[in-house]
Length: 332
Image 1 (cartoon, rainbow, N blue to C red):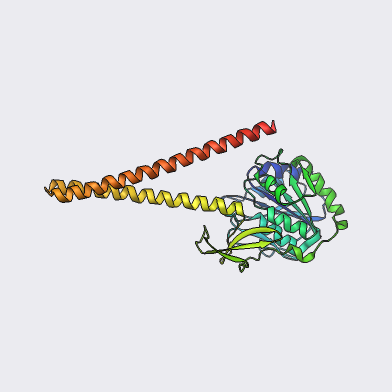
Image 2: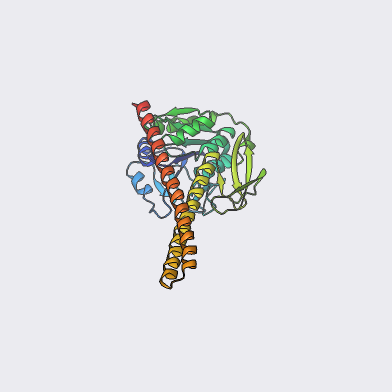
């Protein structure tokens, strides 16, 4: 049986609708979709795609048998994994701060279905899916990437193109028809190393070099793992990050800690000021001067930290705005 795995993030609904419109009603493949959604969101994607697809679209459920001629959608806040004959839907550790994670779907597909797999990366932020697509290629499968120029958000396709030599890079308007053709032809795809598509188990034991870093999610120890010329960071619990994902998560963690520090400084300054006022009311000049000096010091430190945080946010917005402007100019 042919296995098609598709990963999407921001802008993915339109791309998926376009693909669903073109799929053959008698396609001899099981199709699995992971799209990044808020963990609290309703699973609206099956209903939307069913209006555009001749192939039935259903939400994936733990233990369901894998059947050709169906599209399975990962539910919010659950990983979708593929075994040989059935699917698993589990609430395992987040990967690159995502659950469901594209990489996990792709790696388990590569490990258990090898050259029968067609992997597709669509529009989205950051780089989820890139290492999973590499695992599919190494297992003898076919890699398809949406043309970044066509993508609403180009980060995921660009990352995939940087890490993987895809078999096809095409706009979303051509992917559905391409899948129809590949499903019929994939039997002739040569199998590379069956064992090369080893992915990360649901509860991985870190293998590699232990670092001095801590996991942004659980603050446990982090291991640096190299596999198939790819580097990723994993903790003992199972949270995993690409280098870019680790950098983004660490940056968020640092900023969050600094805002906590700012709040503590401002609360301390307010307390010291109140103690200074109480001392003045009671004519305790020495205590008044002591608390007033500490309040002024806390206010000064808080002001410096607030200026740094606000300035950092402003600079980041300016950089992102300039990058977006350059991207729009390049596309136009």
